[in-house]
Image 1 (spheres, helix red, strand yellow):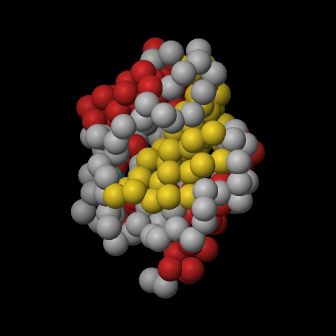
Image 2 (tube, rainbow, N blue to C red):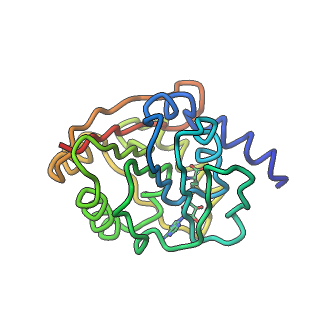
Length: 187
Ligand SMILES: C[S@@+](CC[C@H](N)C(=O)[O-])C[C@H]1O[C@@H](n2cnc3c(N)ncnc32)[C@H](O)[C@@H]1O
């Protein structure tokens, strides 16, 4: 699929305006599992942000043409987060096993200082129809992957246990899928 067509499709699937509104206007923002970097590129329009997109798929990772945007090839489970001010997971966690998610989220919680932000875009199994549609999209794009979704209420509790104040936002109603944002502020 041509890159710009993929970017267009992905932009439709993602609540980019909402994500942009929630992400701080400055600081080091690490987009873990950035893929083609649709979110990272969108956020980089604010020059006081430094965006690092990390992905382990060489074919998806692009070359940045922007000064405040870098892409890095790495396994997000091993990527150092000490300098991060904001961490983003956009449709990434459900590609990791529940155990890996737990370990990685605990690592993020440990790395982020007070009041810093973790933003997660995920599928909510509580939205039965929408999450079933998301399962269809995941099957189309990732037929070989095992998928690990969450129930938003239980996931919120898990994130709170890690020391976050969590707000759950149903971000977009237009896309036929679940677009739930977990806005997690470190307490
Ligand atoms: C559904 S895509 C989402 C891409 C992007 N975040 C977005 O919203 O458009 C999931 C991405 O996570 C990446 N990914 C999955 N497991 C990973 C890992 N262990 N390390 C780095 N990237 C990983 C995949 O390569 C893929 O690009």
